[in-house]
Amino acid sequence: MPASPKADSLEGPSSAEAHAADLYERYRSPVYRYCRNRLRTADEAEDAVQCTFLRAFTALQKGVVPECEVAWLYRIAHNVCLSRRLSAARRASVERPHDLEELSDRLASPERDRPEEIGGLTDALAGMPERLRRVILLREWQGLSYAEIAEALEVSVSAVETLVFRGRRHLAKALKGADESQAATQLAAA
Image (tube, rainbow, N blue to C red):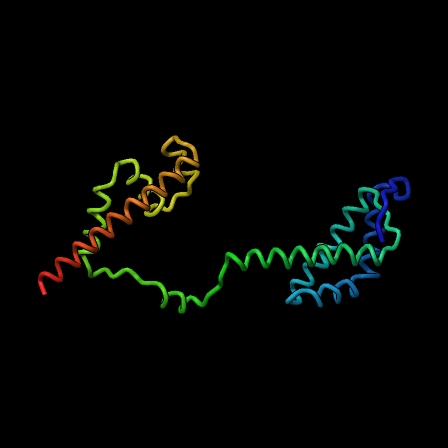
């Protein structure tokens, strides 16, 4: 099963290419079936097969000669499939694909006909220290990355992260205070 480096047994890249092509012709179908049983879709399995043989070719170019070719290829395929499944699990933990209509139903859309809310935001922004307001506007309104903001303000990225955090916290407190005073005004008027 293990492969051992024997640089003298394969001469040059043409020998590695020929050996890889031979392995591909002989073992592509069984390796595909192996990958297909471990991955969700045929496309993923085909990609895994390509990665498997690409890794095998790279190893052959480096002079690796497998003791048992089929076991070696299955081990590579196993590792490729495992990597793909782990990667998909990590992505799934942070990416939650939702139907866009369902997502838009769940998220509150801004209502343009409520000027008091916009006024509250304007007042909250106006009450912020200049540096925090600038960072919030660059990040939230212009959509700049932390690196771009750091360059614009001539500070480090970690300083930008801190400023964005403080700015958001300041803005949230100001908006919460505005909401409470607005609710008190509405109660008094009722």
